[in-house]
Image (cartoon, rainbow, N blue to C red; front, side):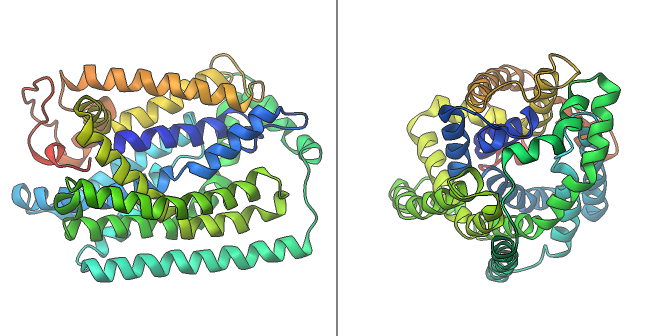
Amino acid sequence: MLRGAALFGILLVNAQLMAGPYTSFGGGPGASAVDRAAAWAVTATTTAYQLFSFLLGYSFVLDRRAARRSDPASGLRHLRRTAGLFGLGLAHAVLLYPGDILMTYAALGLILYGLRDLTPRAAARLAAALVAGLAVLLLGYGLLTVALTEPVTPAQYAPRVADTVAAYRGGPLSVIGAHLRELPSALGANLMYAPDMLAAFLAGLAAAKAGLVERRGRDRVWLRRTAVRWLPVGLAGGAVTACCANGPLDSRWFLVGHAVSLLTAPALTASYVCGVLLLAGAVRPAAGVLAASGRMALSHYLTQSLVLACVFTGYGFGLYDRVGTAVVLVGCVLLYGAQLALGVRLMSRVRYGPAELVLRTVTLARRPGRAPACSGSHPAGRDRLPVP
């Protein structure tokens, strides 16, 4: 269910990055105030990958419990799953979107497996240390950038990305070539933020081992109090990040803003988790729709990139750098709504989404047995657990 909600934030972020070199910053020279405000709002309120990473850490514990009951060789099973995830991510990065996160998740999954026996307290402390350490490094480097460099304006940036714009508007081979050229820098960015992702994994692991959702997931008073307490902190940090990334501060402040985001994103993520759980308790149909979407989150993630690639690159309409941020975000709402409807319809008939079936087959080294699926119900095992 929470994964289904997190997919919308991921879509908002990725759509801006896939739509053009300026879209996530509100547009290039001469962009409208509406586009700039839309990009600013998304930056200030989105913690998509932190939330998704937390949920993967939580699910890791649940999956491991299920695997130990049914498969003594759970280590080999985890290795196969990691290899399958990496393979899907590599294909995704080359063909659709070089900013793929699956390969990084696969590598971090191996580290998480090595840390699987940490106690909840130790995992939480290590997570906090990773976040604090990365925030200090980014803040120090960011302040040096502010002190020692000059800002780069959109007009100065335009000639640097002219070749990229032309490549994305070209044919399929031109698009793939652009992906391959951008892949090293995208992997480098993921590597830089890998400690934060691993910290979110560990926070999810600690929460799962402590049974946090099981103990507090239906305590509406606790959920409401937690959301109200941490939402202002998260939004304040998000506002600082948006000011640094989208203005009024110039481009030199980008890393300073992200250092602030590292420290405050956990508060915003916790508020969102509590908000979704409150919504699920109050509106049962919404909970069912999000749960169905969450069960095929990997398929939705890949489908989002496929649709966006067809819209913005030479695979289809070639609208790269031709659409404003506000229009992109409206399109995201429409696409997400279609995915929610598709998720409900498909998950009432099958047990796994297409990508989940591929990954499950690789993980088990065989095609998973078919099980009857009833509308509105979840299959046995991990799909019945509260977080995924």
